[in-house]
Amino acid sequence: MTSKVKETSTNSPETSGPDGDEAEPERIRFSPEEEAALLAESNEIKLRANHLFGSTRYSEAIQEYDKALQSCPNYLEFEIAVLRSNIAACHLKLEDWKAAVTAATSSIESLDRLCPPRPEGDGADAEEAVKEPDGDGSTKRSSPSTTDIQRIRAKSLMRRAKARSELGGWAALQGADEDYKLLSKMDNLPSADRKKVQSQLLALPPRLDAAKEAEVGQMMGKLKELGNGLLKPFGLSTDNFNMVKDSATGGYSMQFNQGSGSASK
Image 1 (cartoon, rainbow, N blue to C red):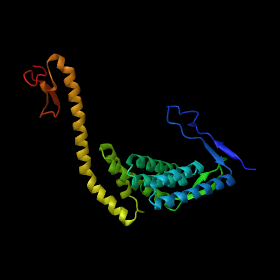
Image 2: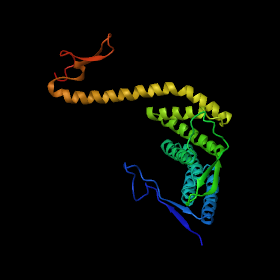
Image 3: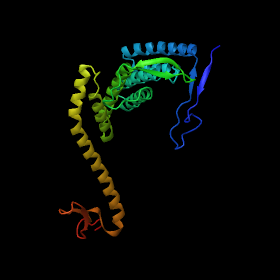
Image 4: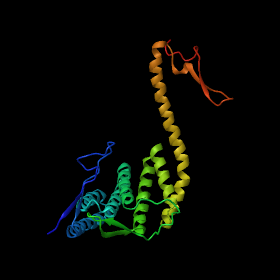
């Protein structure tokens, strides 16, 4: 007779954290037999999805990867991370940048739960196997080694960085720059990916500066429009006010010029 062990997190679907944090899905630990059967089913569906991806049928592949996720026990973080990373690859092919960022981020979060990134230079063994506890606290199965985890992490980071770079905008480009910097410190990248990372680290700074300038300009334009609306009833506009820098202190003061830029004639 098979059995299930329910692990109810403090952030289960029925409850939220003490600070109102987003609830985590309820996790049910299956018996070894049930787990093996569910994982075999998930892997079979994943193979179909891989075939669809290879046939450039990306939307259909996403649907199959989603089915594989539904079959996979939700505590098998590595298997889930692989599926999410594959979904991100599909979205990249479809040029759905936002969806690719979301899927790749989910993949990375699963890997972080399984094996949190270690600080640099802590001397940890790169081949150490990560153990996942059973419902009763015993060690039931060995998850992939940190080498396997880092391989999927690198793929997901590359996919998220690509999507963020294509998405554009100041925040997305900052995220891409952070991802590429993380990737530049990883020693498991293929040579082609390493060249791509170095190229992007050179190309991103001017794009970041241009995006920042554009967004700040848009923000200032909106503030000026708002200010003109408030000042118009008084026969004034934002042109009547100038910010002047004090060369001695480096601070700014506002000067009023009654004769310039009257909003109403």
